[in-house]
Length: 286
Image 1: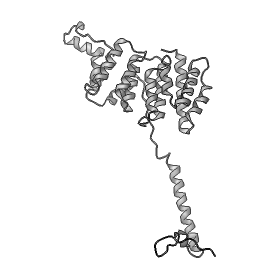
Image 2 (image 1 turned 30 degrees about the vertical axis):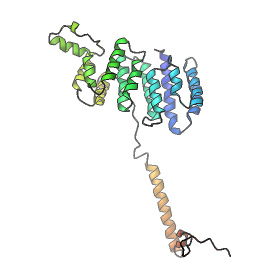
Image 3 (image 1 turned 45 degrees about the vertical axis):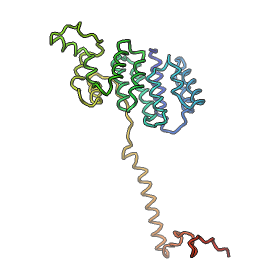
Image 4 (image 1 turned 30 degrees about the horizontal axis):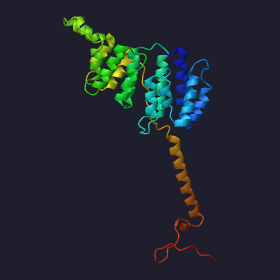
């Protein structure tokens, strides 16, 4: 885990990228400008320099982040790799926002539960590959051996076992229900990773869309929210629509003026004359 100031600067760095990417500025220029804005007392300027060099040589930032394992987590590298993928299924703007929100959460008082749920919801909501994504999550320094073992088990069982069931069985609420039935705590051999409230919410969302589970955990327990791509609203399309309509009105007014002044010259709409054989005749020269 890095110092708090490192995550604060990471959050600021990714926020600047998210704000300036829609301006269609090349990523090389963005990194060069943002490098001078981040705090020089952190290690982020050195990381940005290395990313800029790698971007100029290979055209990717993910490869640079993969080499900086002591600074960027494997999940951050995986998100950037998917954002730069040629498949184009994951938008770069969303990828940068995902990294920004995660850095903001880590700069506060993060918990393993909050980090896992945020990263796993990112995979679900953006339809990323669970195999590679969960492998990257398991390597996060936030998680201990019990967490890594449970995440890798989820990786093998994803699509077979309900996620809510996995969370419920690994929660304190599951232990309490077992105790009410007379089972001894020693019979539960797996690690307890989630609290009593997480177990209750997971039990109430069994056999439902996992996004409902994540939304309930965010409402009740204040876990971080995964950003979404904002769709263009009617207000954003209003000015381009009005411009097109004004152009059509100008064309119609011009035709009406031509008609009032002596008729519309239709010859300008004709193509070059054709010969009887169907070939286009060259223009005559007087």
